[in-house]
Length: 189
Image (tube, rainbow, N blue to C red; front, side):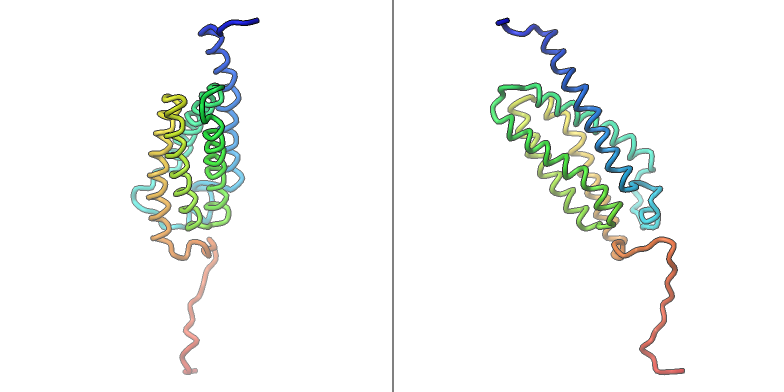
């Protein structure tokens, strides 16, 4: 069969990609958060001092669900753009960005590495900006779908930074553990 695909055939081809990428990105993102006990149910996170602009817990779940859907759709558009120049580079950038994203929750919530978490977010921002530029030349709509994600990453950077600033002991904090400070330097009995 030779010939150019019709608009409905192209639409169906894109939908096949989206039916794979959207659930996959959503599932992997939620799995990353679940396995690292992300959120307010995490005793370590609940014990941290948080800035006043920290949203309620339900906002995070809602925001990430929407963002992962947009990311999955953007990925489907990229995968659907067969033959596009520099598509492979964009796919590699997408993979790197997703790997960084899925690593953040285990690092921050699981290992309690607030500073490393901030570094990961910075790397995600750089990767996402590079990906937006790469996608702009392939599928503009795919690039535009990542703007809300980039905005959320900027917000997450501010939140992560303020948590780091408010909790210099965050990486050694053990919730529920009581400490007694005794001055052992005095020689009085």
